[in-house]
Amino acid sequence: FTKLATVDKVDVVLQYANTTMPTIAPLASRYKIPIIEFWDSNQAMHELGSYVFTTGLSTEGSARRMARFIIKNRKIKKIAIIKAIDPW
Image (cartoon, rainbow, N blue to C red; front, side):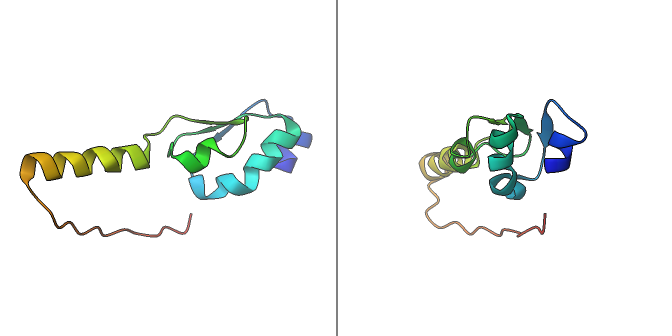
């Protein structure tokens, strides 16, 4: 990010892997370069600073809406979730 800001002199950074956001968000603030995140829009992203912008779905909000729908409309009480932890 530092090279993008100081050598390449980019005006904005487009980002798709939200796991790197906690690392680069302070750099975006330091260099005053906005980051647009395309993958996720959760509460943690909104707390990373005024130079972080998100366009993805809220994982937290989507999970709440899905859970309410399943419980209310399908009368399902037990749900299993399988999640992959991606290296990126």
